[in-house]
Amino acid sequence: MRKRLARRWVGLILGGALLMPYMMAGVLVLGWLAGQSVNLLLPLQLGVFAAVLPVVALTGLFLPVRALEVSVAQGLLGVPVETPPRESRRSWQERRRTAAWFTLHLGLGGLVSGCTLAIVPFTAASLVLPWRDPMGPFGGSPSSLGLPWPTWTLSGLALLVVLVFLVGGAGALLAPAAPALLGPTPAERLAEAEDRARTLAERNRLARELHDSVGHALSVVTVQAAAAGRVLESDPATARNALAAIEQSARSALEDLDHVLGVLREEAAGRGPQATLADLGRLVEASGARVEAEVGDLSSVPALVSREAYRIAQEALTNAIRHGDGPVRITAAVTGPDLTLEVTNRPAPSAAPDMAAPGGGRGLTGMRERVRLLRGDFAAGSDGGGGWRVSVRLPLRSSP
View 1 (cartoon, one colour):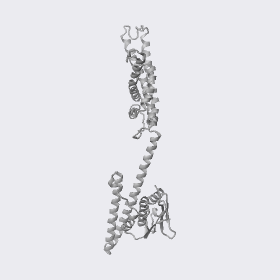
View 2 (view 1 turned 30 degrees about the horizontal axis):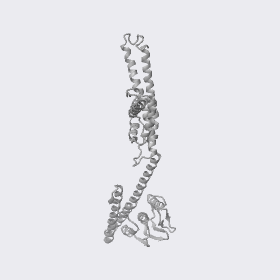
View 3 (view 1 turned 90 degrees about the vertical axis):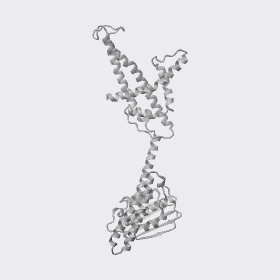
View 4 (view 1 turned 120 degrees about the horizontal axis):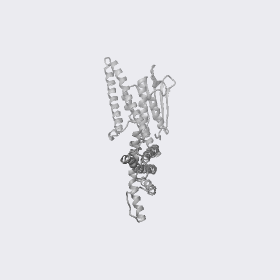
């Protein structure tokens, strides 16, 4: 408690020190208007004090004092103030709030500093002078000022107590005002929230990219490695094909991983072209699975829709390889204003939750998010004949 009071006292005296140039200028202007010589050592006049406060508020609109005042509030007043984001241009709302705090700090600081300069020396003198009296501190004789020494001593101590309460009250008044006036403005909070939302959306997008690309590659590697191990001695040609599929899938996954890491590092080299529906054939070939593809003319599909549709097809094919049984059928075509994409296969008896029910795993969730961002339609479930079907419709004029 005492430590906090001392720190707040220092913070208020700092406000009084910042007020001194304004007071000196006010005294000079007052002396010039009155046509009299000015003595800067005269006690501060309340009229000058009241007159310079509007000047303090006006200068607070333009002086870059916000960072200094935030440091004072946090370091000396002990108030946690949320540091606002830096902006290239200061808004007038932020200027007005900073000017209000600056005026309040310097006004209260000037009062506390003036009282400190007057009361502390007086209290010290009232405690020391009785011991210099020939009658001693308990003699009760009148001092040269006409009052007994105990009266002066008690008056000094009483004024010191009043000063302590004044400092505590001024600090208690400033403390709750600091976060309200020095913290982020509503516009700054909105800008920070929008920036946080953009960052979160970018992270979610990168997470989907990693899940779809690397997850697909690992699924292909797992299935092809198991197949190669089974036929390594009996059918070397099939084993070589499986190993080739593993190599191609691993290389593609490394390329996708390098792209995502490049985006995270904000390097231009990492922002190369992304896979689109034009790479669907390469995806099918690298999977090593039995795939029947029917792909129409997709030249009119916008790049954004083509990229997202490729990732959806990649994830659906991954699920089919991991959990399905038998050949996979992929159809993609432009139907009027929409792109339709469908992936069907017969699920294995022990289908994983991601294939067993819509919304069961991250794969379906990621596909559903991509379709929702493009304002399309998504369906995943049984095709009515014992198989599993993922059906997607994406408007060609969609925007995320």
